[in-house]
Figure: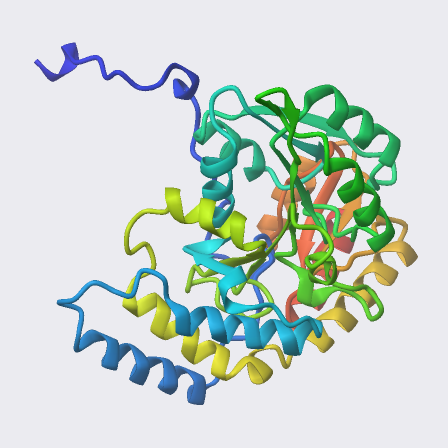
Length: 374
């Protein structure tokens, strides 16, 4: 009987495979841009104690607006980026994935368009698909930077409700210069969809998932929030914070944007356990981010090493490096895997991406790469 059942799956989902990087048990895992340094025992103990306290009231729903967490995130941003954002202008969710989905639920949907420029984060297209938002993808220059004239032409032609731009960009690692951000924001002020005969603004989302890894002198888009009310800056605790397993992403934006997000959020979407863990991690932000400087140094040394050994490597403001170019990148990927090194096949054809690990992990990657390309 079950063989006769036909399920009414959405037609645009039929035959698709779910997103996911390979999850393989190998000695060296450098494929999903994690911070390779686990939290200390003191942090583990504080998290465990905080979760135990939360467990005592798990019979009650969590605070759906989580003001304490929003205030702590605002304090962190003031320290990290030297920009004071009101807690009312902060919103958090289960990873930056849910933040992005909520943005498109509020501002996208049927009859609306979201734009981005490839190569960029492969999940952006899926956020659009999952919210029934039309997806338009432009192209970056051969050096992976944005052509502002092409961005303007695309925005004026498509009139999107949302523009997604990662800075640093994934998988290239390139940061979007602040002057380019300003020019794009100025253009986007009047390129949104027409409503009642009037042009609206395109919501510009600057995705700073890897923002803490940016090089000295590279500012955060948070500095532009006060003067550009159609800007959203997205962050995460998964990368520099070494909290990928926590699943906590957040955004800073104008209150009107936050109010729209609250219309579409699921009730009580952040559990008490998630809130307690995030608050404990934020109390130890200085220690958790203590390896960021060494990871930056390791990244820059890796770029230099790759170039010295005959590979192309892109200057990076993130904790990963895009390198190549290979006639058969899949063959290189599988050859590295036989040496116990897992990296990522992603981005333009011919290129591979490797996360920055510990010095020992990076050395293992270098040795394996030399052997498989000898």
